[in-house]
Amino acid sequence: MKKLLMGLVVMTLVMAIAAPANAQSKLHLNIGANVELPLGSFSDGHGVGFGGTVQGEYLFMPQLFGTAKLGYLVWGGKDITEEGHTISTGSYKGVPFLVGGKYFFMPQKANTIQWYGQVEIGLFFGSYTVPAIPGYTIPGFGTVGGTPETSASSTDFVFSPSVGMEYPMSKGSLDASINYFLIASTGSAGSIGLRVGYKFPL
Image (cartoon, rainbow, N blue to C red; front, side, top):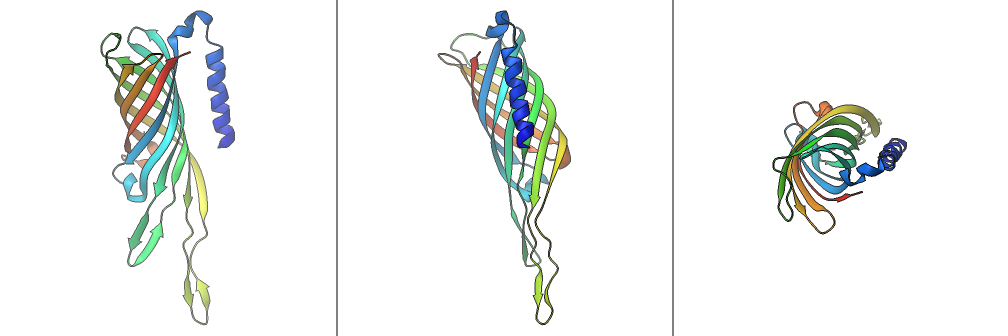
């Protein structure tokens, strides 16, 4: 996972450095923090998610940016009680890598809030831990049952639409958005979240 993350970071930096000199004013970097609230069946075994994302934005035409996003997100586990027994679910974490488009509904103006819609698709390189389940102690027989802690990883398709706003500042802009984050392995469930970031030209 660490090698994959480093590889994606290096690729993003190389793309930024390799951009034509006359296009530098069209290239922006957007760094933000995320809070994700799980919905539906996904919320049954997972708590609130936290993380951060870095997004590159390139202006293709007035009001339309192409985007590429890389980040790290973690949803905590929960304690579930059934028939008098409490089982702890493991955390779900991973690296999203998304590409998409960001469209501003009106031409950009100085010192004015700009509203936009964004649609992204990509992959989520996830991993999760299944905590150990203790066995039962039977006098004269010892401990029976139970399972050790295990972990697994997966690569899933991601779809993420969002709406947001940018407020121009002295050398960049404040970016705040509400997103829906659907990971294929969670079925029809997903999470809805808030991202707050700072965008500046390169």
